[in-house]
Image 1 (cartoon, protein in one colour):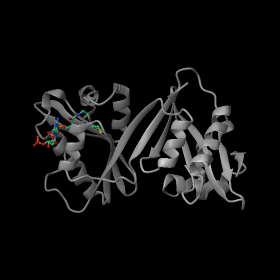
Image 2 (cartoon, protein in one colour; image 1 turned 180 degrees about the vertical axis):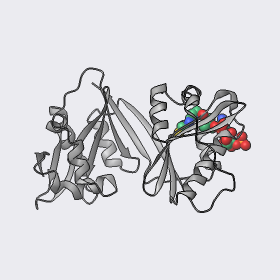
Image 3 (tube, helix red, strand yellow; image 1 turned 90 degrees about the vertical axis):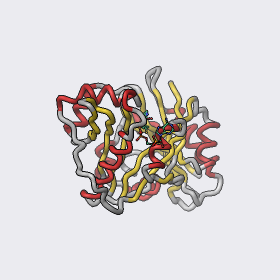
Image 4 (tube, helix red, strand yellow; image 1 turned 135 degrees about the horizontal axis):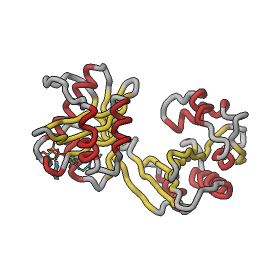
Length: 274
Ligand SMILES: CC(C)(COP(=O)(O)OP(=O)(O)OC[C@H]1O[C@@H](n2cnc3c(N)ncnc32)[C@H](O)[C@@H]1OP(=O)(O)O)[C@@H](O)C(=O)NCCC(=O)NCCS
């Protein structure tokens, strides 16, 4: 096995490998657009004895304080753990971050070899397990669809979504501009709110929360029904989301709404701070 650098000259040839890793067709235009000349100094490609491309490691800056790493080794290879460790060690020797920067690798739960390599290379100061839930959109729910918010509700949406994690009013206003917020209102309050993201054939529920004053009144379930109704009207095939395994109320809510776990897509997130 030989390790070499990934750069603009070989990125195009890597397209099949990048697509395998992502699980869908990766466009070279996107690759070129998001190519980061600084971060790419730490990107490595593994090539097998017949010159076949078998794996890579790279990372993309997602914000001022964190980056997302991508590690892939062809599932047909022997010694995947060893190859992953060589890639990670080369990556570590080159990558530079400011102090406090978080680097996260998301690895499929079932991929024991890559999870093991990540831990062995010290990339797992924090581990979170995210379950992938999905539901096929088959028939319409009968309720009318009315879950789009008004701009004046932004601060109430922030208040509700903050029961999940920190969001700001400018985040919410930006998501509203993208038509990506759905709500259920009760007594002039935003009882449940969801941030969604549409792709060609699916809707992802990126975050969802119910305000503490309205828990266990069916608000999240009703919001999910509305998102399913919207998906049906837009001819999407699936609605999906990722939830941390410690969030028991959320897991019960999704199961009750008919979502099923897809363990091929569930992941362990490994984080390391610099
Ligand atoms: C998960 C969450 C959105 C559910 O909101 P909700 O409006 O209270 O949910 P619903 O009232 O629609 O509950 C639907 C069903 O889920 C199950 N459920 C919900 N909360 C539960 C809890 N705390 N314990 C056990 N089961 C629960 C129940 O089966 C419930 O039906 P029931 O009340 O008739 O028994 C809410 O608990 C929340 O905001 N949690 C914090 C944020 C979060 O974890 N978001 C998900 C991140 S992916």
